[in-house]
Image (tube, rainbow over all chains, first blue to last red; front, side):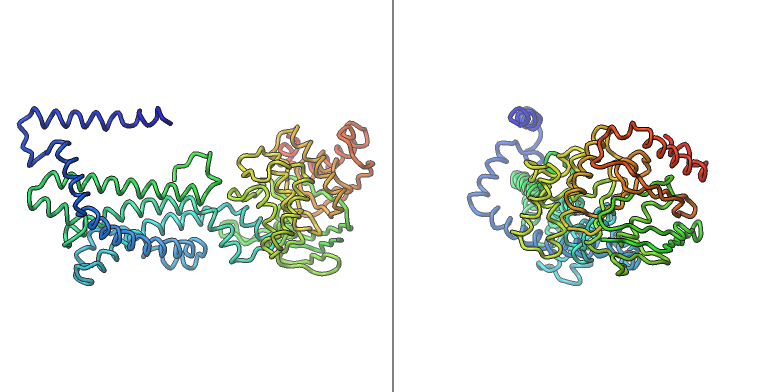
Length: 254
Length: 261
């Protein structure tokens, strides 16, 4: 574990050193590429003055709100669609068509419909989360081993019991794969909408830093977004291990 | 419990092949506490028969009666064990065995009592909190047996339960199944393509023929019990094995190689 950690930070450290040397000895302007140290200083500064904290909270509220609503609907309807051919045939074309529209392309429309406030942002993130969870859930439910369903049935389980005690746990690994995608993309969509229509949040901070040519703040914000995304994904992986203890020891690629 | 299958018929409508008769005029009568096997070439409808009895498939015509009461839907009084075990990978050994009772609303304390009994019966003490993938194939199949028996079924249905196991493990599992049967007096319907296995375990062996699947003969096995593996070496065992092999071979030349293999 320890050697693995040291092994994995070799490359990032190397990049930082090259970056530092590059900004030190080349003629590149700090308005294009600031040096790592001034980014770190800006990062700490923004942490201290609460700028990062308040904007992170605003952004998290939007992305998590949208993610929770979207993925809940995605999982619930995915189970239904995967389970019954009636719902599958009814929704198949619609889902696959709407899914093919890049979610970010809907931002202008959502802004017209729901304004530039939180509603349009949360709805757009929910929309994208929905499609990232509904498809893996459908696949997961459809791929449940029939022998498991037959076993439960032969022991007297009814439709609802089969759904909750067999279909749901059996498709949990693929549902979780979808959840992880949805979490990561919820940040992506969030930053995009905050850049085009916002007056607060981390995406807005990026846009504002660009306007002020404050490159150190821009990089510091990017760093924060990276940390945020990584933390969210790690949390989801952790939740996966809690909820699916039987997957421990097996290679987990969810 | 006594089971009676009368004039069972199963027709499947396939969009490509049209309608196909899988089973026709199939009659089986099993007395209470009997151990009965069904052998036949692959594709003769053995599994279909078992799943219809289990209530997992619908029959087209005929009657299935348990103690003269016709049965239709799946119900815990007919427990089935599959070749691929069918254990829930997300449940521990103990929870797998308690699944049936839990579904039927048996109290927690009672469930624990039941699982303890059957874990002991199949010799899996110490593995209660293991997940299925942490067990060998033979152990998994013993869990599946215990899980089926935890429902206190009137009839235990087994669909080639030991085919996926190596020869040594299979022999051990066969002995365990016989011991389990002796202890519980459950009525057993055992489906296999292994003639030796059927003879070794059963009181009677039903021989099926294919297209459509029906009972061709019923061979009583009058070997003394409890059976020991060396019974397979006796001449009367060999005679019966040869008899059944010829029956399946004569009626079904195409499948002969598969059966003999």
